[in-house]
Length: 277
Image (cartoon, rainbow, N blue to C red):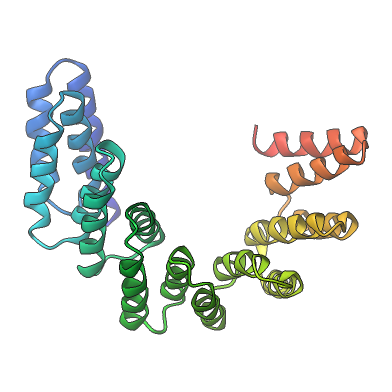
C-alpha cells in the first residue's frame, strides 16, 4: 500500500544519507533489513547502489540471488537489471528476466528488458516461446498481446507480430497497439495506407492526452508521404484536445521551419517551451 511504499522510499533515502555521512555500516544494516521484503524495491536498489559504490557488486548479486530463491518475480527483475546495467552480462540478464516472467512477472519494462537481452544474445527462440506463454497466461489481457506482438517483431516474425497487435486492438489496447502496429506496417511493401488507417482509427477513438503519441505518429507518417498540410491538421486536433502536448508543438514548429515560415516556427517552439521548459 501507499504507506508501506512511503516507508520503503524513506528507508532508501535514509540509507543514502547515512552512506554520504560516512556511516556505511549503518546504511548497509538498515538497507539489508528493509531489502529482505520483496515489496521494498527502493531499499533493495539502494542497497545495490551502496555495494556497487564500495566495489562490492559481487556481494549485491549474491544477496539478490539468495532473495530470488524465494520465488518473487520482482527480485529476479532487479537482479536482471544489475546484470544488464552494471555488469553488461546480457546472458545472465536474460536468464533472470526469463525467471521473473516464469514467476508471474509482467509489465512493459520487464518485457522490454527481456526482449533486449534476447536480441543481444541471439535467443530469438526464447522470444517466441515467451510470446506464446504470456498470451496463454492472460488471453483477455490486451497488454499481454501488445507485449507478445513486440516480442515477435524483435524475433523477426512480422506477420505474427501484426496478428498479435491486431488482437490487442480488438481487446481495447488503443494507442499502445496502434503505434507499434503502424510502424511494422510501414516496413511492409505498400503498407503505408494501412498504417495510416490504423492510426486514424485509433486517434478517432482516443481522448485527452493520449492523442499526443498517436497524432505525432500519424503526422510524421504524413510528412514522409509529402502531405504536410494534413500533418498540420492532425497536430492541430491533438493540441486542441491537449494544449500541453509539447511534442506536437515541436513537430508543428519543424514543419513551419522547413517551409521557412520563421514566425510560425517561433510561435510553435515557444508554445512547446512554455509547457516543457
